[in-house]
Image (cartoon, helix red, strand yellow):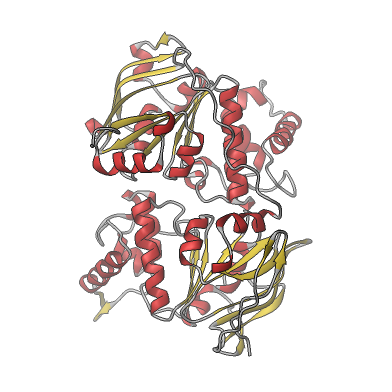
Length: 529
């Protein structure tokens, strides 16, 4: 009989005590799961169990095998070796439908919804409620409203999914998984695109599932969430299980060190001297979405300008308007001391800005940033084709050399440069996207959510990449929902609320508390007594 137990393990500086096994059998157990794709093995002999009424967290760096393990447990892929046990019997899930029929559901990290259907239609897609020979839209809308309310979603059953922000689409996907009673719910990075208040609501949902006796497997790069939720923690590294610990025995730092297999270096680079040079970029009265968002700002060489605020505050919309991706008007833009002509202001586009030295990394790397089915080479060079292919014929040798250089320079960890972008882990996809925009050798880089959904090791690398950029005299704008990130890397922080900048923070005033206060109250830092 497979029992739920935390194992006595010593790894590096972390040693934990033996705890007694749970008295009950595991709801779902993996026994020696191995997965290989051709000659490449990505998961090696992993065993673990998930028990009724517990949250079992799985942590590890990008590429550690977490998502592969989740897909094996939920029937999306089949193991090369090993098997599953459920209700004390060996079981096989030939597909995800079989797993869901047995009560096991996976909430994917990627958004797998139909954008041209309503929220309710997505929730019930493939399992519509009948009313005679027709579909019972009223009953589905009513049930959808109940589920959306239970997870803190702000959308309505009749909203079109394609019109929703990324965070709301993620909540709809979670609602679809929880529409029916489940015995095992697997969350794969469920809060990667959520704001702080949405994260709080989702954590309450997970706690509610645990209280109902559901077995929850929870994968997250946010170690504070793991610390707040987990009963037990399993660490994967390079496709292997390092061990399972009772959550109370591990600090966040110990978790991070177990993930990377070494003592963690300083996460953020040393603070820089605040720049005083003349601005690289001056924006006056940028008005986006017909007045929904309006702001003015400057960026100096050698500066990281952080943009904080809640989801919906207008942060992304402001810079999409600047790049010509949304309807926008602007009174004045000055680049490197040169005012742009009114003609150029009217003709703004991503391509036009790139030619001027300004590039933008979207927050949605999978949907808007990369061509997931294409190889690394076209993803890297697409925005700089003339640079790589100056003639009429594609220079494949030069393109391959650029890919190899980017892989080395940005530490993009791949077994082969001939992989597709979709085969990379999230952290390596983000580094590929960064390498892609840097091909244009810009003077100003705008990065929207630079470390969303990536592990702590890759986060640290990206922070140091950003630091290197600004130390070379470039300017960088970082839009982030992660408050420690803004505090750790920004020289100044502009906080937005309701489409407007409500305060500017510098020096010691850049704290999580001050950012939250301004983002939620709309008052400038120092305005309250």
